[in-house]
Image (cartoon, rainbow over all chains, first blue to last red; front, side, top):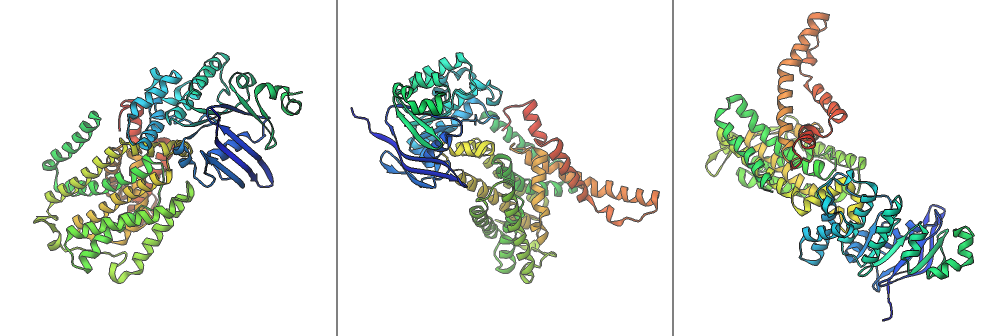
Length: 240
Length: 331
């Protein structure tokens, strides 16, 4: 089966004052793939995916999802279409229980579907990341690693078509990273994944395709093997 | 859920049971407190649960009060339909102000609501001919009845106030435990995250603001009907600060906090203006030979001090502390 462009961007530009943070000529995320976006600090990775999910508007360019132009669409409507974003800086509701944290996106999904059980969907999401037995504990009291997992569970509860993960393994212990890789492989069976990641072993373990950003531009794109072999990438990023 | 029904049912039952035991003085006080607590319940939906601090809620209280009282005074409507007009006025005011003010956040929202309320206050003063400004006007006892019930009678008035309060309390408890209520609380905690979970925060904030305004307006209209008076003081900034204070004292984001805060503050002010401040004035005069007639009526000073102390030392209020320490399920 030929893969189709699920989420595409063309001529996408974002300026902050005089600084051109993102300048991506063309980008296509194919349905069913795990795509990693890598690049040095300040390469514009978070800005780029923030444009895709609508956290702020682009200076120029178009974004399309399932062939439909969503450039002008506000973020909450994109989420409703199926683009979920998990935050780089853990952005959970600290004062609420884990259950209430995932009940919110579960409720959104149920509202969109016009039926279903919020409780079941919420518990399913917690189950998948292994936090079900802590459902009634306060989110802010959890370890950092568990908070990162909760963040992912919130994305999963939305039942998205595309899950955008912004540096999900940042701050995790090695043992937690192992489990995390297994979790994402499992999630990827039904969801397209766009992963921003610094940790190269994680990228190499998960990604089918890699997009390398440098100073807001696409420096290289291809399979992990191609990227590893690319001289320009090595010079810019992998440390030559 | 069951615990919540029992808790609120018990509160209402307590207020019913209290009625025959009240002296004439406390009878009037408690009826007034129940109306003002209704106002506070409305304020709490916006401030306590949604996390939006309005400094202009007096305009919604006044919209209800004048919407109702002017229909009685100028159009000679009976108080029942006039009450509904008052509530509708507050609803429209909430919608219009919300559509504009909710474009701002934080301090901007506080300033915009404050300015709207000042404009409303000045408008009431400007149309002095109809509203009689500061001095206000009374609604004659003869017309203050609905369905054959004389609302100026103390017992009837008490139960009318209690009915309104109970309805708003139950509505607020149902709201905050509903799906929409969960979104409101989430907006208070982290609005950006709520947006990225697919909800439009603006719609939910507008819902909270309009519901809040409707309850404030119902309280204002009820005040005019039950106590037979409308005056522009109720549109002043003081009456925007009061509900904030009551809610802060009782516990923002708790269903029963507004009532508790209103009761405590009402009797604190009562005690201060009746005993403490006149005593202080006499002491100052006796000890230092300074005549300070203003001091005797400076009870607002205590209100201000209470507000500062609350924000500094107990931002969660009485029931907020109770929830954190003793009863975690408190709605």
